[in-house]
Structures are given as C-alpha cells and as structure tokens.
Length: 283
Image 1 (cartoon, one colour):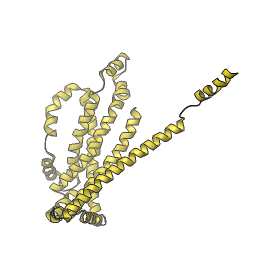
Image 2 (image 1 turned 90 degrees about the horizontal axis):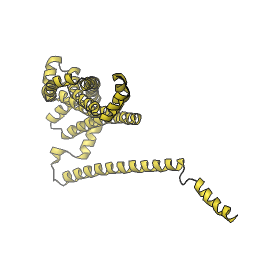
Image 3 (image 1 turned 135 degrees about the horizontal axis):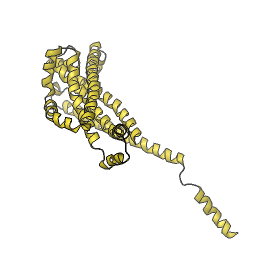
Image 4 (image 1 turned 60 degrees about the vertical axis):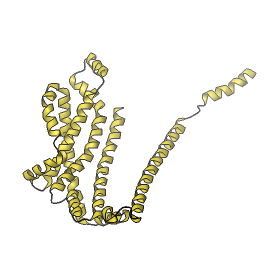
C-alpha cells in the first residue's frame, strides 16, 4: 500500500505536463510583444535624440537655421504641403511612374534571371552587354528618355525600370544558381523532369531571395522616378524638390525629402509583408 501511495504522486506528476499548449502560446505572444515594444522604443528614442540635437544646435547658433532650417519649420511646411492639392498631384505622378517601373522591371527581370540561370551559354554571351548597360548612370539616361518621350510619364517609368530590372535579374539568377548541389543531384536521381524540378524545388527555394530583391527594387524605383523628374518633368516630387531648392526654401526642401522617404517606406512595408508570407510558405 505504501508503495502504491508513493507511486501515485509520481504518476500524477508525470502525467501532468509542466507546460500546456496555451501556456507556451501565451509566453511566445508576450515575448513577441516585448520585442516589438523594445524595437519601437529604440526607434522613437533615436528619432527623439536626432530631433532634439537638431533643435538644440540651431537654437544655440551652432548651425545656421537659414541653411538647415529647424524641426518645427520642417514639420509646419510638411503639414502645409499635405493640405495642398498640387502636392498630391506630384505624389501621384511619382508613385505611378515608380510603380510602372517596378512592375515591368520585376516581371522582365525575373524572367531574364530564370532564362540566364537555366541557359548558361546565353548568360555568358550576354554578360558583357548586361554589365555595360547596368554600369550606365541613371541620371545620364533620363535626358535621353526625355528627348525620346517628352516630359511626361514615360521617362520616369523607364528610369525606374532600368534600375529594378537589373536588381531582380541579379537576385533571381543568384538564388537559382545557389541551390544546394546535393538537392540537385537528388532530384536527378529521382528522375524528376526539368519542369518538376523548377516548380517544386528551384522556384520555392529561390522565392525568398527574389522577394528580397523586389523589396530593394521598390525603394530604387522611387529613386529612379525622382531622378528623372529632377532632370525634367511637368509634375512629381523630384520637380517640386528642384523648385523649392532653387528658391532657397530649406524647410520645404526637407519636407519634400520626408515625403519621398515615406513613399519608399510604404512600398517597402507592403513588400515586406509579402516577404513574410513567402517565407512561411517555403518553410
């Protein structure tokens, strides 16, 4: 009886798990929330230090406010631009050109990367020409595109395309060529066709790197569109930046730069969500 009595607590403690599923999920949720709070606290802290240092240096005369403005003036100018209809016209013009270049450059860049990765002879033959075209400075291409297509939508979309295409082509090629050799040998030993190997092994393995390249290309597409607008355009944030800079409106200049940064952040956050979905799907 004593043996049975001693065994019962042991059996009870062994049958009762130290942690159940709900406890583990709650701990993971608390850890994730704690991490997010730490990240946001660090971001806000860095931004607060930067703004305070800027305001302090301009207020004490260490930096000339006429050259670098002040945080308050930049914020006021940004709010005024938000109430201006022409500002939203410029945002729409830049965003549409960047998106056109991003979509077309991503599609053709991914297709070119797949073709060059699968046909090595073609890639070797085209490599000098690709290197030559990729080495061309984008601001030098903008006047040519403006000469051909005028001061409209076309030049900014083409400049954005010229940047995004090479980013996506390079990332796609690198991802497809970097697949583990043992996995390639395994697919061959299983007698998988080229089509099966591509859609079941190569493409899922390369998708995270491709989406990562797309995330980088989204930021560069805005830069390409802005560069083209700075060279010449009827509307756009780049043209607005040139106008306010030439008029020595420093606060307005920084406000336009903030708008450009926010536009790039919106695109980056959108594609980062897609990247998380792709990463979960490919695991």
